[in-house]
Length: 368
Image (cartoon, rainbow, N blue to C red):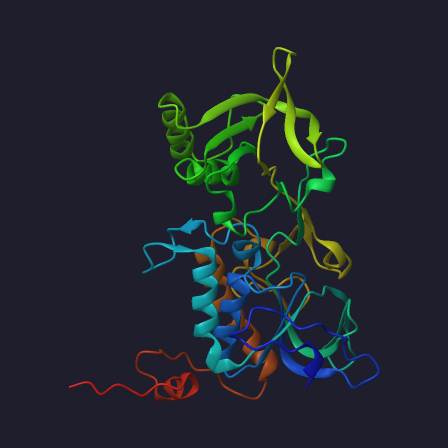
């Protein structure tokens, strides 16, 4: 096993990896590409079938978009969990998969996938890690993604100090003068979130119409009416520095007039620029940057390669985390005959199966 790239299930931070180039490849039954919520639940569903998985992600931490972009954003549609944040969901999934001991290889991208003569796959990552695997599960969300950036001369040098494309430490912005750019859910969510804790919040959008949830837009307008935040229609067209700090932005409105707006921090939420990256070169059927799958096994056109979560597409597809969980369950059962060709797979329930209780490391309940 490649110890230089290992991360245990209860540690979301990856050590620096030198890869296993020059050594024998890691042989495994399953490789999961993507360590977001759906990828993590794929570990669980495979684990119930006694399949050990290796998980690869281009991000340096586990959790995917939920942790990278909005760890503190509330999620309300996880069954039996009335409310949780992206970080809490990730932490709970990591706890759930602990019995299966997955190995995480973080901060690296899968660059090569090739079918072997024996039916398995050769897989290689950008850090030189090599695998031979029977099955591949692509749970890569929207692919390799980067936030769309603000195109204004001189602004880049403030990124990470006064310019942010994601919020990792909300407390940093408490009591400060904020300008939040964007018209989607992330921009509205954070504007509403900070309206009660920041010194001032200005939501800056290039037009009157929004792409966010109607309830969020209504709440934002209510706060504006009550002078608890401000909406400005326009675009950032320039900046002013003072003593090496970003002191003001220049905002040009629909009327063509440019006004100065002082601020402490500028938060920009223009959405993500998804890129399939090397996935586009693996011979998979692609439709609008998504992988086409069947709805029985969520298998791609290449036998042994499955796609679950936001990366896939099929008639009636809904991009919801709970849909991805369902897909992961069926994908695991679809892959079982490939992994265990001589084994009959029985449907069992975690409530009553002594075998699953043993796998999970829990005691079988006694019913009267």
